[in-house]
Length: 139
Image 1 (cartoon, rainbow, N blue to C red):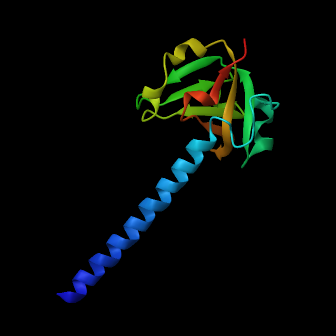
Image 2 (cartoon, rainbow, N blue to C red; image 1 turned 30 degrees about the vertical axis):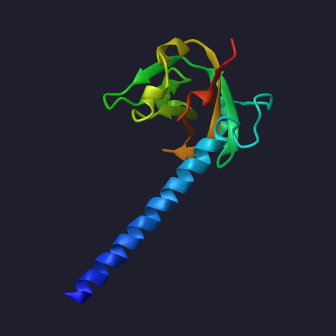
């Protein structure tokens, strides 16, 4: 009986430590998004065709949104190419963050700058947009 309690205590400690680690990662990143971790709004943006050159960096990527697509799951994608499957760059706003944004359909046809950490997803450069301050229209 005492051994089982020790095992549960260890599991609880590990889960608690994991929760703290995740919380710190999320709050550290969200605090850096508005200013893009040292990338001021006057910093030059790279064209979305060249976004892969910024993998692993917090950067600004610019382009014209050709389509705003909402998936069945409620995730919103800003498409910069007519065929998103062949596009070198993508953005996503997860449904859990959707409530922070206004009418995203107004971005269709607009030139924008997207700021955030450029990651690789399915072989393409991507920025996950979690806060409206990461999007700026330029026209």
